Image (cartoon, rainbow, N blue to C red; front, side, top):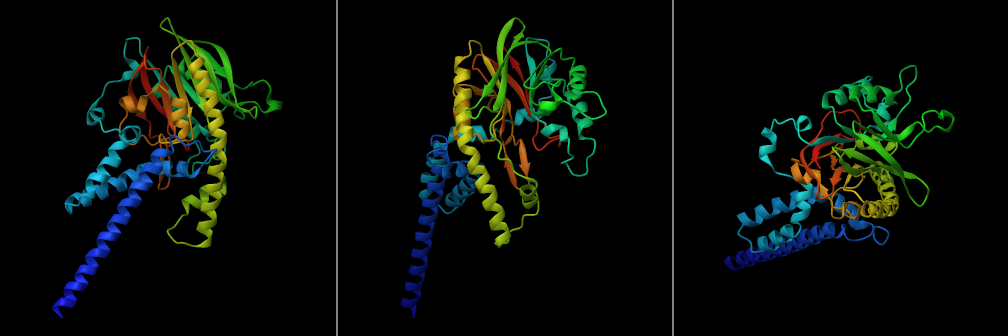
Length: 380
């Protein structure tokens, strides 16, 4: 009987050890696959991009597992630790732990030096169709928010200029910010062409040399303009990479999502998966075009926009190149800019040339769009 008990315990230990090894191998594989998403073009293989999208959750699971292995005094803790540290740069792009930033009360936007405050914001047509439940005054709150934050330069994506029976949205914002210079990709006089929405840059500094960023399908993915800031030329990029184009049914599915493995959930996930996958290839082409324009700029650049990609992704790496990420320089936390129920991502960015210096990066948590605005102060 005693021998049988020993044998039973031995079998259980063997099974547990084998399961641990399998799970360790799985965690190593999935983590490395997330890292690979940065280098593998989605045109060749899309699956790593989906894994890269989940990197914050994978990182959290890795850390919990490392703690468990350490408590159990398992040698595989060194393997997991090495794999996590291999992606240290991705950790920095995903999570910033700067306790001092939470206690920094400096108003970087109002420093009387050569700094300027820049903001990027996908305003989703200023909530023209009342997408935000329970709010009928989002447009006015956006105006109040901008007045309070008072950026020197603001880049809007999905901007809507016209507003029925009221003053043009562009005119209101220009006056509230005292932004004398406006560069846009639409013509508000050509309403019959429906060209009163798109990209716009408001600035207190002189802007000139507008250029369109056009993809292979002849779609405008952004605009650039040269700003004269305290006697120094800086090229501003305002971009928006291909959206997933989730529809009302997709958002309703996410909002009503439960944990049941039923046909409705499977169908909803499949639909969203297909839409995400379809956008990857287009974003790759757009990212390459933007990368070429950044490299061709004779001036330092600041890139603002909605990339529709997390930092652990091929397109983010392509656009960023040798630029600095303002969030990595002075941000805090995860920097989430889009939140859909339990899905939280950082997909909006302010990047800049290394010779420029950013500080005071902030993700504004005011719920005025399906994106949060971001801002920072930049010193030429």
